[in-house]
Length: 281
Length: 182
Image (spheres, rainbow over the protein chains, first blue to last red):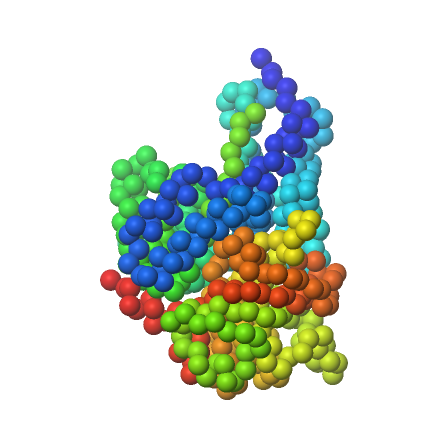
């Protein structure tokens, strides 16, 4: 049975999700920040973590975006193969939703039309859209506005197979150390291992949308996530990069098969404003 | 140590500031990021005057989200300062005293801070909603066409910042991290 979803419905939901994600963090992030306050050893670090909690309260109560960088809108669409979208093309619907969300929601327009000429598009479009065809008759939408303070500190390492697990660990630590205070720690570290050059980057981005506190279903990857979180928090970078024991709230690693000759590792860093809204139509 | 400072920040003020101090700023400061810095530099290249009074100026690296009706400004946290590294030493040499942003600076910028007895403050990145509550007024100064990147003057009250690089070149990003490495 083919199920019909109207493009109007997609527009409305994307619009609401852009506004929602920029004013309210998901519960897992709120919980992780609260937990960090208990364990942080630096007094200044504790003070900053308290301010981040206050910031979330003010944002939600007064409808002021959590961060002024309301991001470029990254949208993941998981389209059930029994879904028929009626109306305008899906891509146009997503962009119309972003346009309405960013203009009506008082969100910053941070997108330029051309990377060299740099003229602002004035409505934060286009979005970055990742499509996946999945079984079923539902449409799952994830809107993850991504700020560029942390995006700029993200890296891809094309390691050799011989570099192995140790090489992966070193790559992650290098990226986090280089990011330091620039990426607005405490950060969430999304890691993609395997695939091709671009696949590893998408895996890393998807890893950022995974719940903080969740773990890879692969036991050795779960161990790696825990080990890297511990190692990162021993770097001393701390909240705001001003010293402390809370540098990251989570390390989420996603993997994929890769080529016999390669070991791509992408590290996508997100600040403590790790935003995503998820809905299923 | 917590300190309260009224603008402008002069040499007499930076004399009292040390890396690690927690400071509350009150008074008028300018707001500019990449595009506005590029335009100011181009104006200087053409021999034109700057649209701001650079002497003892404090520039906050920030691009706010739009203000809702009845409010002076939207979310207003710091942006990454390293993107202004190319432009900052020239403005410091012309009289600018203080920069507010977040993240590491180049040696050239730190040298310019020492040379001009200036200061680099960090505001808390990603706390834009909270920081906006300390901004009482916002006025457009120039480059309106740049939208979120326009040059503004804002009036702040008890705006919280931390001294990262003081006039002696002490750098909190380097010293504080060492204290918590294990």
